[in-house]
Image (cartoon, rainbow, N blue to C red):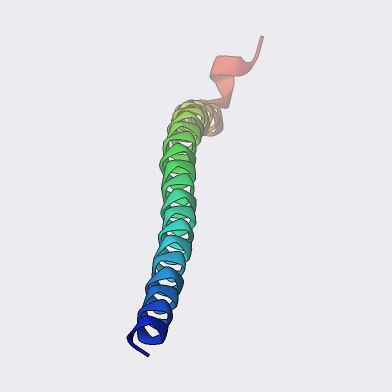
Length: 85
């Protein structure tokens, strides 16, 4: 009977080892997916910051042009004789 108990114990250890490997594989897959998600978010943030910086430069240029036009219109309105031939 001692032998039967030893086989049962060996089977239980084998099942535990298999479960441990399955858990390790699952954890490895989750870790890989988390790393992939993190890499995507880092790249997304960098791309977004770059695009926003470019857009901000374009808006600054447009604001300066608008200010110039406003000054020109104000000058033309105040002194229409400057623009008459």
